[in-house]
Image (cartoon, rainbow, N blue to C red; front, side, top):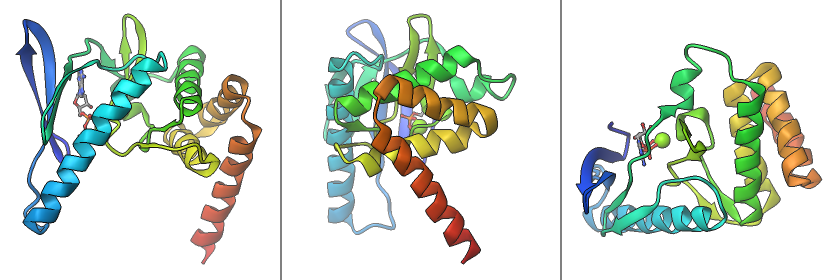
Length: 192
Ligand SMILES: Nc1ncnc2c1ncn2[C@@H]1O[C@H](COP(=O)(O)OP(=O)(O)O)[C@@H](O)[C@H]1O
Ligand SMILES: [Mg+2]
């Protein structure tokens, strides 16, 4: 379990299975700035995890926050993107993923990297992880970016269904209009 900017390891916190996400030093950054970035991202991720949980979204409970690490509950389950390497996403999973995003958004949480690589299938249901790029925002364009990210990741029919389910769950027409707008802009940029 190693990411680009964080190192993940399993450990035990008060006898419970936990994961530590440690943001490691980036040598290419000036030391002081590097500490500030790692510190603020760590704090932000912990805050967003707590807020998401409060909003009723299934995500790891935070056990401990250090300057550069978060220790959180180890979720038992499978990563959705790993499963999708073997089979197609189900309609139920699409609906669940859309429902979670709508709920995050209505709590003013933008995930920032909403893809099947950050969704887990657990026996309690679908769970979200990795709020490291998230923010607290009620900006429709920020929210639309989350929708676009997942739509692209799923692709095709599944992607379109995801948007429809997001609209059904959020009732936020503006966000869905902006999804189309962002896609138009992207196509325009590609053409140059
Ligand atoms: N709470 C957790 N329980 C179980 N596995 C986790 C948990 N948090 C992270 N992981 C595992 O570690 C990987 C990387 O964690 P993530 O927070 O997505 O960091 P990154 O920023 O590196 O993508 C995940 O894809 C998942 O497999
Ligand atoms: Mg991730």
